[in-house]
Image 1 (cartoon, rainbow, N blue to C red):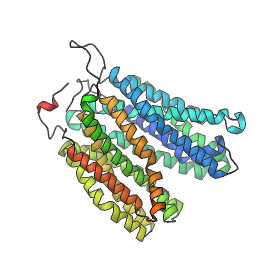
Image 2: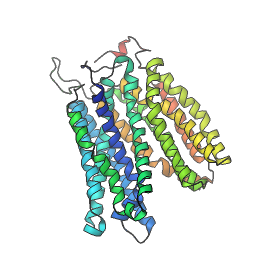
Image 3: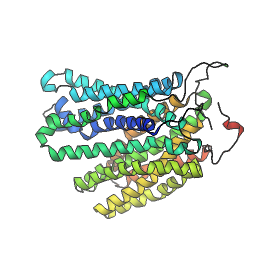
Length: 430
């Protein structure tokens, strides 16, 4: 495995600043989806409500387009000048975008300028989030004790689950407290403003973080190479695994739509799946990381995914055959547990396999491309498959195929966990 230069002990509050900042960025990105209807009414008014919603969702999708750009620019910045400046830049951009979306006047107030500003802020959100994952994941691993790298790096996924859960709970709270008109006019803005309150504190604490990698700093042998080409095989295998996990995660997110549209279940029951997915990711991703520290990256990611491969079609068949709340929520929990346990070690394995000099940029770009290409299209594809085949099990077959391909990539990936690889020439420290 490739180690970063040793750093002084990093306080828990500083680790908290990294993961809370990461959670806030994902919270901001996801909150838009929860309030897409209200944002559409405010900035994309139309006589046809469907047209307004579609324009709002198209703007949501625009954020995915900028994530690879953010990964390239900010991720590579993390390798060239250090993790801390890259994390500060991504967090600052997200703070600006979050405040901008919350404070932009409606179309009724400033006309066409309103949707233009919203699209610009949404693109900035995507840019910021695309650049957040690489530096923060690299930082978490490099600041961890050798035997706890999996646990620390898995906080990346854990905080994403926290963001999903928090965004959903705030949305439910606002919907219960405010009447539909108030929620439409100003209530949705509160969800964004809640996040902006954390930005100044997050920036302050992130500025105090010790650096784990100085980038192109002074070195007797010259600066380390940031050429990714020698590591393309690792990046490609990591990209396949991340894409497979992304498809599985977004199919699980699709459970809400699947329950309401395909199975015609109540909306409150359907939204329960979102809470289960977020809560499971938040609680169990660190367990998956810890297991990878104890037993190795490959066993920790392959065993749950082999079980997921075998369970996904029977689980969907059971939900379809017995469309009750208990079946829906129970099977969602089972599949999400397997996916979460296996997904956390995937990111750990990829991060650990990459040299420190290219780690931030390679992770950022690989992750952003996987999310943008496969995450941004997963729900559209499964909807199309259901319509085209008339088979409600179509999402399960798509997810099963993705997981199978991911398992093949896991088999080809080398083991990197210190518990499994004590000393080996190919893992020489850089």
